[in-house]
Length: 167
Image (cartoon, rainbow, N blue to C red; front, side, top):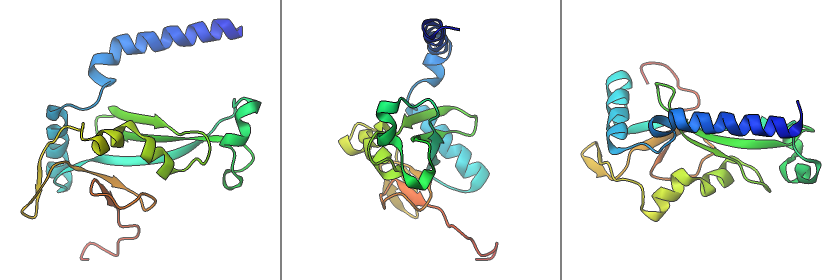
């Protein structure tokens, strides 16, 4: 298939996905969606106020143009360039946030600071859906993250090696 035909097919595919799934899935969560997430995690896991897990992962970029290779290449990830993907998905597999990494120094922190998800929090545009935990009211829920993220009120780090059920 020629490059032009491939690009046209990809464009048609993306337009179809946006038309079919746009209103239901290609959007930020509403107040109702967040309340449903709160209820799900409270009922199934006992975590009040948890929105979802936030994950940042790297993907090897085999088709990276030669001109960009140095921007996306680090020794830690081997010889191939990579891009980062930050994603939040709910239990019903609704991926309601996805953000691909930036050029330059690619790591989870750089992606986080440019992420639309956290830009809304920083600028005060995120909807306030109150959470009460231990008698304290918070304006937003929280995301479960691993240890690489900075200490922010909306990011709760997991326990890397829990001892046992009693502790």
